[in-house]
Length: 222
Image (cartoon, rainbow, N blue to C red; front, side, top):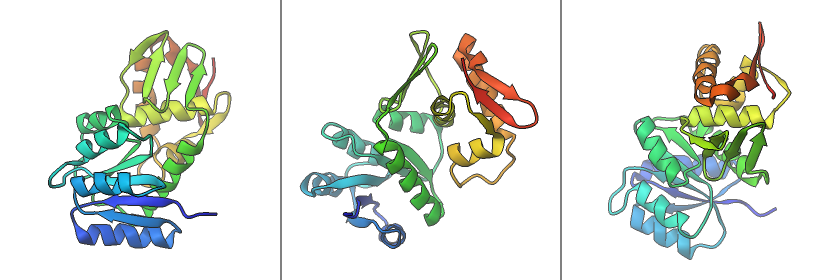
């Protein structure tokens, strides 16, 4: 099977080398760019790029500008690297079609795990999910409840998607944590309860789809 080609864009050469070394070890082929303009040129001149890892803060053209240019022509998965985690910045990226955010500093192994997760999600055919009166467009990152769009944070969107993909399945908090937060969260599993509470509130009447299984976790069903 051909290696998946990944474009790594960062103005720091040490960061590019770190990411390249771990991705190469994981079996990927890596192409590099040192700024936003070079990233656009490389992307459109190089055939078969399967994923883009894109730093936000770069000279000449920032990561959002690069993502915007790429999205005019391609739905290739994009992972953004950012030095800060701000919900407004994340929402801006998702509006441009960014698939995932990774905050610096990060473990290269976690980045590889995120790459694998994003590639796995992008290969799934069912990008639009419908359960009861909830519609979820995974490509557009849009959720509609009873026909009206609602705003969700990134993790709320991921949590709802995971619930909808596992409708009718009893899910433990640990399993939800491992799948929605990948491998980068080592805190209290009760963080799930906080996100579920917020998600239920935003879903309105459809929040009742999320059933609590006492002593275990949750089940999503109509």
